[in-house]
Image 1 (cartoon, chains in turn orange, yellow):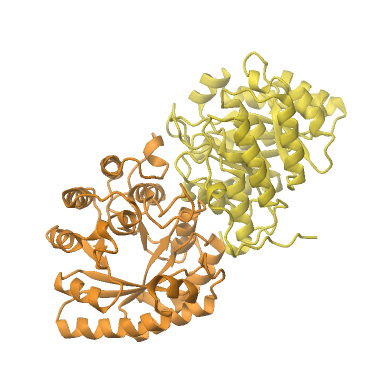
Image 2 (cartoon, rainbow over the protein chains, first blue to last red):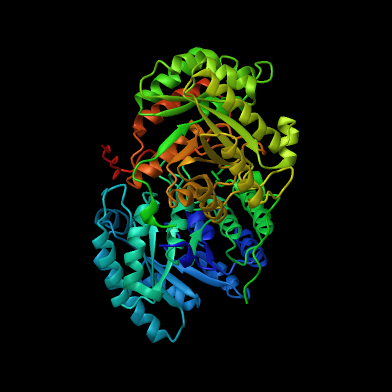
Length: 314
Length: 314
């Protein structure tokens, strides 16, 4: 782990439209979601989760995922991903020609059974079915296996590192194009991130694609920093820090996109994002979800007088 | 910079009773300050700023510093420090037998003139006079030269690294026992912290004692992480994150003591602090200053189910 490994270019994958909006009661109209995507792309965003192919009755906030995905596909330069809970969802993602579909797996047996009514190994088997469907479809939709509760679980408590790594390997063996790690409940710290990510990178190599950190206990950005130092170059974040299933009223959710973009830019790391444009978009999004908890620090403080955006890389 | 340099033991110096209380309108009664100190020591706090020897008419919130210092000196195991703006303040600190007095210097010429009506070099000269007074007094009060606006300034903008380092060297040459660096306005990022602290440590060696970071843009803890990786083992922080002269309404102030204590403990670093006791004290302090902005994440979320406090070091 060193300064030298820090990548010069990092992609922030926006998860506000999925992880963010699924966690709040307000149902944001489709037209606002489309405006969000349009403005995000104008602000330089290159990747975004746009929704989730779960049954609409379970998650009415994301019932328009098909339409949002279709619109996202029209935006040049945007890679649109969707969450899929199972083969049925994956088929919808393939129908919509998503660039990427993410199958979440919870490394905590207890959390997996409580939330998905499946064991983690059942989810691995589902990924193999999804891979077969993708290959048969002729679509180029990438498959990401996202290992959640990777740092512990509010139900089960401890989640063994060896179990997280075993499941990551199993997802790769079952045909995942990529894997990622998520600190679903905000239990990670820079030490545990360094330890687990180092091992995960050894297993997955270039197929390790993303770190997903929650700011539940204020450590999202420092956890990103620990992963950056291992060369990880893609992180999930949510505008205004919405979502992230906080387990306490008012607790912070996802890493906030604008604060993360600021940290990376201040470090001279290119993200392609125009932070002032992001802050303007944040203000619009906060207006649409008025009354819902939002997070982050930069929107209050503004950019430092000394701030200089990193030069775009070739 | 590496994981290996991370110290096994870190001291969090509480600055809430000085930096925190001077920044809010509420005047906390002396008896509450004494209770704060008593409870902080019971929670394992080893060092605390207890006030500032500025003229009481300028800072009525800290007018009782003499009494608070006298009480702090009775608490076993607590190192009590005070801020002194000049020789007159230092004489009061010596009279009160403070363990440490901190003379702040602003590396920004513009900030220094606006806030102290002195150039940075005038402050260096004042430190030499303070050193002479200390030596003549027979007291053991240590002298810390604290270089502020070390990462930039809201008035002047850029502050050159070379100027920060020149002034740090000048403070040491003038007789400072220790020096520290402060990101007074929340402009630092992990990259600039690594660069500046590495050079500062080369200059000051063991006489470099402390990093002081503001959470104005959400980067206080990640900046601590960058400094930790260089072996820095003392950080200022404030319970509930109060203070830190935020320059925007609602902006965060100092690193929050409880969040920092949690991060360090999660990393296996011994701080001596009992986090549950700190959280209980935080709740009392927040009650005393009701209506004032407070910050931090841990108090809402609570400790992870998997949390284990690091073993005390011999």
